[in-house]
Length: 184
Length: 112
Image 1 (tube, rainbow over the protein chains, first blue to last red):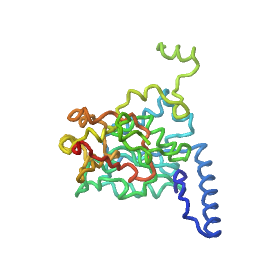
Image 2 (cartoon, rainbow over the protein chains, first blue to last red):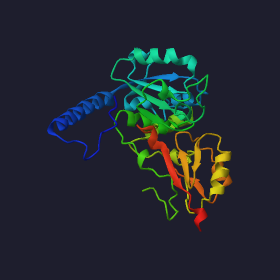
Image 3 (cartoon, rainbow over the protein chains, first blue to last red):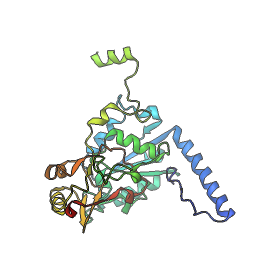
Image 4 (cartoon, rainbow over the protein chains, first blue to last red):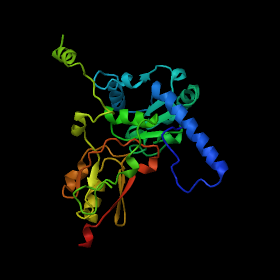
């Protein structure tokens, strides 16, 4: 389930039946985003991270960032959680625990992979780690950064509930002063 | 009582308004690099790949493949090729598709 990813592909819808289906899907997504938009409970899951991502996540509930004002709350139990915030490269010893955590969450649920380890950028796949959270859990939102700053996490959570539009696909990472480049 | 809490009570607001408004502290964040394709040579690219502590950079002929998801924003690539690399200033990088974080940078510095 992912309220943020709108199938905005013009020319894909053909018949009236698929239009109806797309309309129904949009309505459902809007409804879920509205529900999640008011209050969302987050369970963090450390799958072998170095704990710097956890430090940044913990800062979210500090007075400066004040996560609760946006309707996000941390919960100690996956059964109360709507969103699973996963850090670390997913060590293989954690397979069963990760699956159990995911299955214990009531639907609809969102999985957010946090930090470069979780995105597969740090540890290559080997006998000890999967190296990528996506290998084990269905990831809805990816938050890069090593570690992602609390602002980047706030942005990622807002993307996950569909409050803000993602802008990563439009970025080119070409410097603005280069005649070839400029961000779009 | 710490001074900042007194100051906060007087001003009324202590929290950042982010994401409704930009946060001032965002300017100080380390951010992934942005590249200048015209200044970038294949030699620069290979040196940057050698110093990158992550698997964030790869080269395929005249294209530098930059995986933003793997980048730690350490700035070592800017250290070996300061003429071709600058900070992008982008930290709002969360995305719903992993492939959206893999960027292709053309290497045009050898053509001059």
